[in-house]
Amino acid sequence: MKSFYLVTNIVKDPDYTITLKVRDYIVSRNRVCYVSPPESFVRDGRFFVPKEQIPEDVDCIISLGGDGTLLRTARFVLGTNIPIVGINLGNLGFLAQISPTSIFESLDKLMDTEPDIEERMMLHGEVQRNGEVIAKDHALNDIVISRNGHKEMLRLNIYVDGSFLNSYRADGIIAATPTGSTGYSLAAGGPIVAPDSRILMLTPLAPQSLINRSVIYSAGSRIEVELGPNKDGEPVIAVASWDGDTKVEVKTGDRIVIFASVENSRLVKVSEGSFWDTLRQKMSTML
Image (cartoon, rainbow, N blue to C red; front, side, top):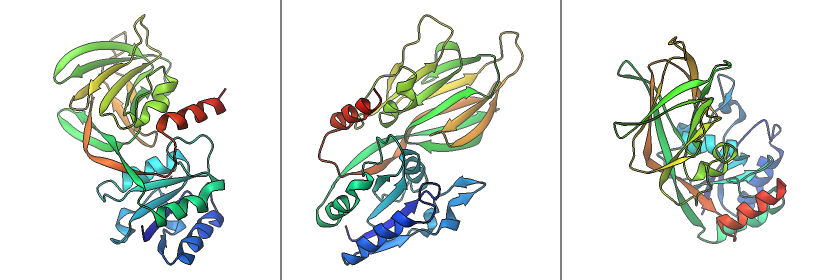
């Protein structure tokens, strides 16, 4: 790889101290390195990656932050086909593989070898109201429908490929990719899935039922989550979120339609170990 683009979470590296060290090292190796300016990252108070500013000759995008930074970067650069690798400046990181102590070693590998690139399935989710799409986005980890600060449980009617499956009374529900199986879905009791799989998982959040298992669907399935009224038949309001970031208010009668995106995220693999090695190491830090 000869040309890189750095995306920095200005909360994690506010003075660009690490970012500039990375840039200088890449340039010292006679490679090209672009740095997105800090002012381009804030939109409505949120971290934003301006896809239109990424030069066409970029071979790799490096995100500096944590898993959240990489997730947001992946969503905003979707469609560019540029692979992404993350430097972890946060806490527990499954996606941001490069630790602060191995930055230069990993950069050498990126510049001197042809690293493996993993294709990761993404979800497309859209909110439909009265037959019209009012919001849509992509997610690398998950799409979550949850209570909007209300005490009352939600009634969630699940349809798969047009057929009614089940109705949950729960705090919400998580639709996760294999990549997202080690995130919120895992905390809610969902299974761990190899990241190169192509499946979609639904995991209820604290359901009022003796059956609280996750359900696994093929990547070709089309899932619809309809928000029903409360137990008294009155309308309710909830929130749909993509990777814990984009959030849209939904109300009774709305349907959140979820299916596999036609686009994949491309993540660079720099570590020598397998996904299961990484999982074992990360799990041991949480004991």
